[in-house]
Image (cartoon, rainbow, N blue to C red; front, side):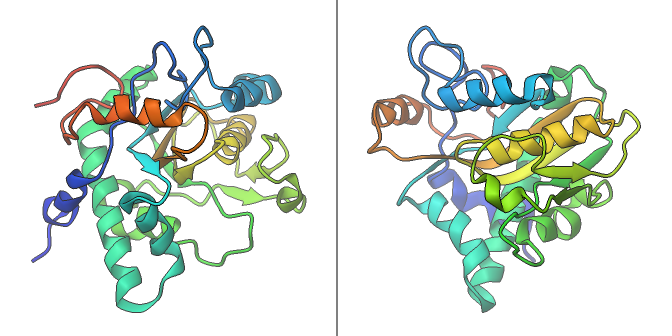
Amino acid sequence: MATVEGLSARYANFLVHPLLPGTGVCQVCRGPAKPGCPACWQCHEARRILGSGVADAVVPLSLSLKNEQYANELWRYKNTAGPQRQYFRMGLAAVLWRFLVLHEGCLAAHCAVPGFDVVTTVPSTSGREGHPLRTMVAEMVGVTRDRHRDLLTPTPDAATLARAASASRYTSSVLWGESVLLIDDTWTTGHHVQSAAAALKASGAGSVAAVVLGRHLNTTYGDTATHVERARLRRFSWDACAVRPWSHA
């Protein structure tokens, strides 16, 4: 019988821990930042546009490197059919499940909340019906299934906003101070996730923390290759804390 540990085990061969915030590392998304700058340009822009509406914490589960295995699977779980699609969805659901079992408590402590009351996902603005990430979080991942709520809806103008951060990209159901764990599959600019966080806060959410399966990076862009080489120096371990420089083992 398949288990979460069994289904997720092979991913340890190609997942890459994001670097912890510091010199040259964005304190928000863990991507490359110019020396002396606490955040990359995209995260700086999101903060400028959305202010306190941005997520209180962002934790990428792994780097997702263009043309490499993990990025390939994050594409295939949405764009293949039949048994292959189910294979990738089950694998990624197991990865998310295992990660949250080990690290959700630390993320909650980082946000100074006892836990996350509600779990939701960032909806597609491309018109995709039945997004597979929603299926994974609402039906497949045991630690999120009972807390899942469909909170976010794209506005009629969402598709015209491209990747820009905007408080008018999504609307949210009313919340009454609940802490929300917001999940997305891929962070490129992060503006969809941050726009979703802003909508949740505008509708009454307390703390909002974002977990993304993959922080997408293209190693041919600028100094990204050097950033990734630094990240690869640490061998992937499921026990490595997502927000602190220690292990849970």
